[in-house]
Image (cartoon, rainbow, N blue to C red; front, side, top):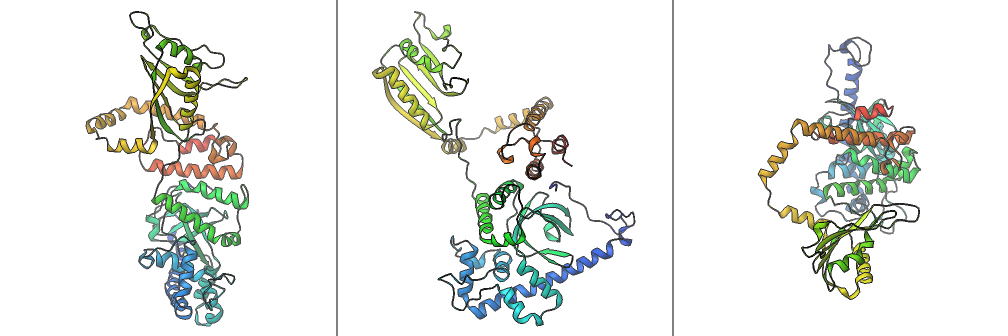
Length: 485
């Protein structure tokens, strides 16, 4: 199912009905929709009355110990916030989970005395169902059986409804919702519970954070890990994964709230640490060059050629820079540059991008130059330090303004657009980790591949909507080239 649709506007009474009948809305589906709106209001009323009542019942009959035990489990035993009662979502996220789902484990040695081994909602239905209206009974039964799950927003009717796709079970459902329709965009992800009575569904007990589409793929990875590649979970399996899913949500929440720089690595897989080694030479620059020059050879190539400018007026080598190249295997070639070696008179400096390469080149220099090269200093700069230094550098606003002006020139925009078209044409045949190391063309041939492509396209569209970018993908064109409708 496509996750990229434009939001629909509200329909007027005299507009053509969207069901395709050709009749005016007021003569077609208006009455049905008004009935659904009435049922939505009934369900919201049931939620508003029953959730606080069940919460008070739990505290009154079982004491605060039961809620404290539930709080520990809700936060996956990772520490309950000290000010949890002032937490904005305490009543809208935790309390519904507490009354709908939490059941004290009979095998838990810290289980509160007398705690029920079923949810408060189930207990209430068993004891006092006769006190409830038919709608309230149906609401509570559905809420007690409906798990929290991750839903992708696939369609929006402002002020009226959201169409949701359950990422874990693959099911699609429309929920009657008013306020939230103004805050979400297609492709966004919700961690919520859907309660259905007859043909009307609402969300109850939603997590507070709206997740951008970039988290769709990690949720699919979780599903594949649990159910198997490309397989869906049953609703019962989702309910059994209550703890794991809340842990996943809290992990995503933490990464969004406290973003961390990903660990960057070089082509050897080493963490990036820009390292400079300085040596004092006890031999001539020419002698050092001759002994280090073989490090620049790759299979099938000659050693480094020195230009005339590297010599002084007397014909002696003065300064030269050697590229330290990766030595390929017997049957392969490789042009990977591992670092640079700069000779300038009696001074030699090596620059590499990891501690591991620094150790390797030190061994090479010791082997080739021996006592003729004396290590005088080592300087290491991490990516984090370089970024911090850049932030502290005063901004040149005139330079930035000029850069922005140049970026907006039509010929520059045309250049970027052409570069973008070239990149996205190549993207179609590039192997992507997000697609299981398949190309988009290969992924489009399988159902699980198409699902992952849709998640990528939702993320692309979301980011394009955040601001113009000449190199941004044309999602509609990519979908057409992949045969996706």
